[in-house]
Length: 182
Image (tube, rainbow, N blue to C red):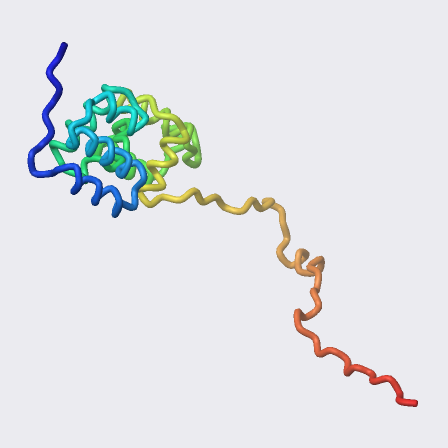
């Protein structure tokens, strides 16, 4: 049987219950009440029942509480996967975007995400999805802009003749006719 991790000595059951009562975070309050059970002389099993978890989770709470106090029992944001492109990769990507594609070299006349993902693979051997690359470019301050398509033989003067005229948005209403009194 293993020896349980000892709780820090600068708190007691009443102070933890007081902190739980004042907490705005329900999960933190639940964890504080479970640890207050241990401070009051209860077993780790009883604390697990109060917290609605298993013994290993109670041990994890004790370790977090010992390290950071009541703030250690707040929910933390998961770190997530590290970024695939580092600062150097992003700088090279920005330079590539600013220079624009060379049709003879790159085979395209404008950059698409699929083309940039292929370039990142060829240059750095990093596989990145179009969605992730679009998110990275957006964080770098780039926006997807595309020119409005226009037919090469379009006559701008002829287009004016076909424009619809909309009535003015505001018109003065007719005065209300009052019924004749009898």
